[in-house]
Image: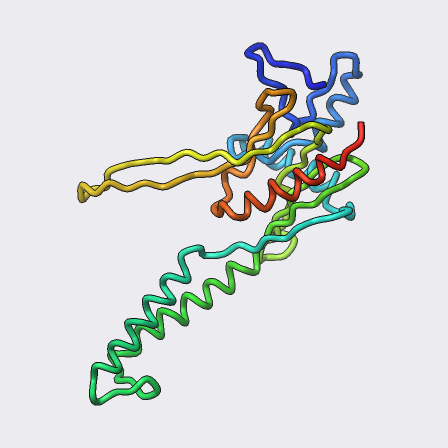
Length: 227
């Protein structure tokens, strides 16, 4: 059972909080191979944690995993809008057709082409949610477009039977310089143990459906754990 903090919150499983009777050396070794690379760390701490996570998990073969590519979520709306505009511009002009547009009618196709190239580049990046059954650990791996230099372990989390994951959200509202009211919703995954929230992760992910897929995948693995 995880030790409880003074305010009643369980110690973070991302740092694999150790019990008091464990030697300090073992505590330190476990803390190095578990946790997450937080943007809040200073550069030296960030690189130290990153190096430790990569060394502990990068070469280990997972028992199961799911992969989720990065994407430009609003791209499909731009495709639809530009296609509709192009059709309207060419069909309403007697001097142009869909296959032979005028020069000033080509720009929607240029936008589509540039966006498609950007979408392809972005989609070369992906996340892997890896499951290591023996260690009862979920590892999140980021694959960048620049090879090993941009690929790294984001976090390693050790679970216990009975842990529960849930998706939470918060709506952010503001008024822009034109006086228009704007809003956006941020999502994150919460981990609960023994009725207490242990930690959160995934707040830097932009896609709700990827977080939901991660929750479903890991919850299934947690249910399969044995005491």
